[in-house]
Length: 305
Ligand SMILES: Cc1cc2nc3c(=O)[nH]c(=O)nc-3n(C[C@H](O)[C@H](O)[C@H](O)COP(=O)(O)OP(=O)(O)OC[C@H]3O[C@@H](n4cnc5c(N)ncnc54)[C@H](O)[C@@H]3O)c2cc1C
Image (cartoon, rainbow, N blue to C red; front, side, top):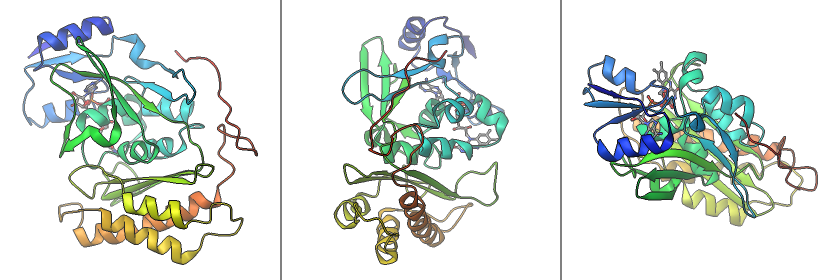
């Protein structure tokens, strides 16, 4: 096995162009497991860790700035440094593995692996993220909904690498829920994310581990956009929350496998969706770090290192 170690992003792209067979490695929490379990030995590893710029996050320019999360930003840093703007993603990140896994693992690695059970996917779908993919041929921004192409398959070409993920800051409350067979160090039996944009009267959703790929529940989103009393001050209508849960469950296409039965997954999704919506609704108007009482968005300046 060859071990390729680029010092710069340009070197990494050149190496990937010359060796499309090379497997990128960032945190290694998926790649090393595959190697240790002897599930196919890569012909070459492309170690992205020396590329310092991948460990940075920043804001994109333009009228609707997004968080540009470098491919080397770990879950631990995502939680501590970006949680105020990306509460749904931070909540999902807190459920990934253990502190050791979160200290090494990255969102880009979750996307590279493209497991339907990856915890990063539902919140990225719910908030409409973009994947910044690059090769020596150029850069493209892939809408997250187009990124997942099959079980553990994604839209990257052989010479492309993920440079960053662009995520809109929360425009309202967000929530992530996951069912597992225990409380920690567990791959999702199924998972769900919701993101509300109260001012735009829009809801985003993401379903995990209940279809060949992570997916949105489009009909459930349209139902909320049309039926939720967005200006209402009162509690959530239980009948509306129930219907939302049903529509989320209908959007799933689960299978029976070692982690759970299809029927159970559908049922759990309906419950999680109903509860998540209730929790999010209870928090509307107060998303820390993103808006004041008038809904004005506050952007913290600067770039981290
Ligand atoms: C004990 C344990 C517990 C875990 N628990 C969870 C869990 O609860 N939830 C969960 O979602 N996952 C879990 N995982 C899986 C893993 O931690 C995550 O998928 C993590 O996000 C992988 O990130 P990484 O940086 O370690 O990726 P790596 O292992 O380095 O790479 C993963 C994949 O992405 C590709 N890749 C990496 N970087 C790039 C890039 N820049 N461009 C293109 N492709 C790239 C690699 O080639 C590989 O295919 C667990 C793993 C372990 C070992």
